[in-house]
Length: 593
Image 1: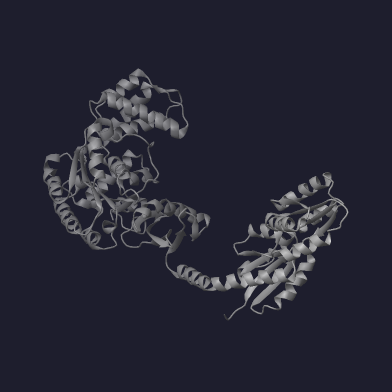
Image 2: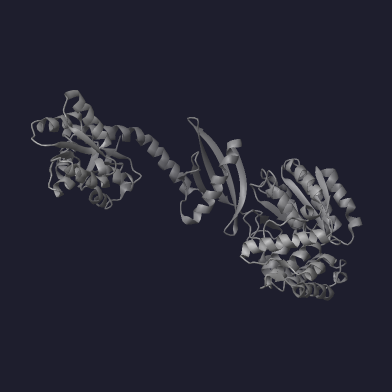
């Protein structure tokens, strides 16, 4: 060993300081610094030092107990030997008065053994916590005791109450025993400490964050700042998944960037530990600095509508929902086909959340924004989300994709399927020429293990429309602490008789306007009528026939963006969310870039 172990000793009484310094001269391998002070006074002396420069702390009694609460260093105890106890007990053997020994449990047990062996008739009392000493001494005085034998804190309170006292002191032999113990433990731990320091240095120098947990989910190493606590919680929640396997890889949106989180389970002497490495991804990431065609959906994502509402299958075809959920849970990919506004997005989100892949985020891909070079990279780059374990990918707007681009996408996914284990979702929503799309989803059916779902339209479904409206109101009351108790009969009739050409999304829009503009306990017929009139005016201002599908793709995209912006009252945040893109991408598309 080439260095001395640095020890900070805190003596609860002055004479022990000299014993510590004299005895330390016999141990050249120890560098001992000594301060004096009982309990809090000793703790204040300790706080003057940078404890990272020391290997251990040495103290006694209540002072040791208090120091242990304020440092992660090992805290060793200066013992009181049987010889030390015997000297004091023999000293007071002929004392004329009532004697009590008042000390901490470890010393009290040793005193009890000694008194039993030598038939000394002394009464022994225990201090559980140092701040109980005053009350104990007062009780002993009231019981007629005149001499207190104890630790520094007991002696201090005895003197204040006018009682005679004898301090239990530690001899040089006891201090030698403490130094030997410290040296042996520190020598043994030296190798492990060096390994731990190397590990910490390695972690600090890597371009990633390291989190290390024990089996109870307690953080053993890592960033414990408030900013990192959310990541700690997320990783701790992945520990049960690691119990089923030795490793997991997932991704998470975090403060505007995408993180890759890799977890590993290790056994040390049959005890499991969990290490997570977290790094920022640069290729194929969504967001301002990433690719425009890719976005993420996670459980924690903000919702524009009240939570807990049924999707269109749950609402109109519960049997189909149950079967679809069962097949997706057993590994089937899923294709959704429906009219405009049937909200296939919400249905995909609901299926994903109940799938076995829900621990990782859902990647939403808009192929209308996907160029051939980007598609080639997406289907071949090993860092692509397509090749992550337990990945889920959702390809939207396939009805609007031109034939050549759809075929290119299909071929790329088919090749990647040999190595990818991702669960796939596809949606064809809103096309007026559904019969022309049949070859597309037949090809998907042939190449992937696929379950196809025809989404039912909302028209002529009066009872289900009413049920959905009531659930919407209840969810809004719960989230916003409002107290809407229902709708006027005429308002119900208006909702149930409307044709709903834009299906569930249009119903959601009307209900959202109704609950936000209602201050009374009831939603009135006038409120619903005004909301429906706004929908009809919007449809007249931008009829379907005005969407010219014969123009270049970038013009079609620009026209679609303009229509969605108009429907959302030029709210760019809401429009971007509906289109599944960022606000930056929306702005770029508006400019025609």
